[in-house]
Amino acid sequence: MSTPSIIFKWMALAMVGLVLTGCGNLTVLDPQGPVAEQQSDLIMLSIWFMIFIVLVVFVLLTVMLVKYRDRGNNDNYDPSIEGSHKLEIIWTIVPIIIVTILSIPTVTTIYSLEEAPEVSEVNAGNIQVEPLVIHATSVNWKWIFSYPEENIETVNYVNIPVDRPVLFKLTSADSMASFWVPHLGGQKYSMAGMETELYLMSHNTGTFNGRNSNFTGEGFAEHRFVVNALTARDYDAWVEEVQTEAPPLSEEEYAHLMVPGHAEEMTFSSTHLEFVNHADDPTYSLEKRAELGYEALNPHSREGKAYEMPTLSQPIDTTRTYEVELDDE
View 1 (cartoon, helix red, strand yellow):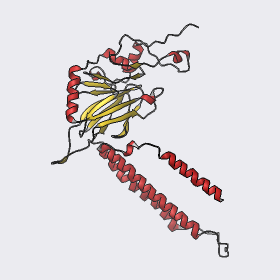
View 2 (view 1 turned 180 degrees about the horizontal axis):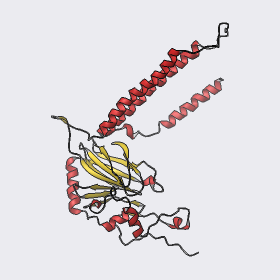
View 3 (view 1 turned 135 degrees about the vertical axis):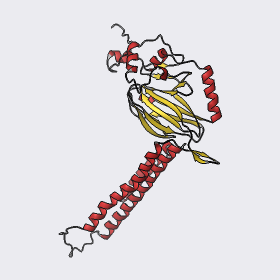
View 4 (view 1 turned 180 degrees about the vertical axis):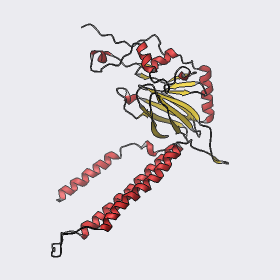
């Protein structure tokens, strides 16, 4: 390889490295709770183990290239070689060992994450605390959070106390979505007609971004929410404030949340679980959409181009309908 080509190659690598330094911190490697910490540790274990394997392979490759390079003296070279049974056994067993080494911590972590994380107490060590139960319902393109014990419902944001496990019961009113808060833990799917569970917990106060990580169509990019991790005192104060000052959620208002579109943050002093649970009634949203005049449209049709995706705000206008009216041509 000529000197200019070598210089060009290293300049290109340097430019790539410079561009990559502009990337922000990887949130999955910045855990703010025990669930995310376990997953981050597993990711780093896998990365370092794979780096070790790559280094070993490159060292062996270098040895082979140097030791068995063409030296111009091939008088003793015999191409009729059967092979090495010893090497064949080694390169069969080594991958099995690698997979086994990676499988043990992976399986252990997966089973550990299916249980509520323990809370660290100064005088009592790690103890089990009753988790806070929150129902998270996805609907194109909003997230609805229901607190059955507190009788509170929020839209596109959720408040949780720090150092207390939270059990999210996930379901969907329509498309299959994926509930993901990278700072607090990995994703899990929400599907209509069934319920999945995900434990999360935050060690630190702060606001963490969550989103749907499963593509669900036109409004997918804005299918987001925020998680506010509060101290126990601030959380209790918020619960008391909502219970006394926020309006209750009516079924008429909830029907409008079923229509595909976006919504601003909302807070209610009652939950939709009083009249529907989408894990038990997967067609509820379709029925409510039909009652409000909404129908799915081809975005390339005249009707589809004329339709404006709603962005709901509180209080919800319950007199609104969603039929598409075309101007006469």
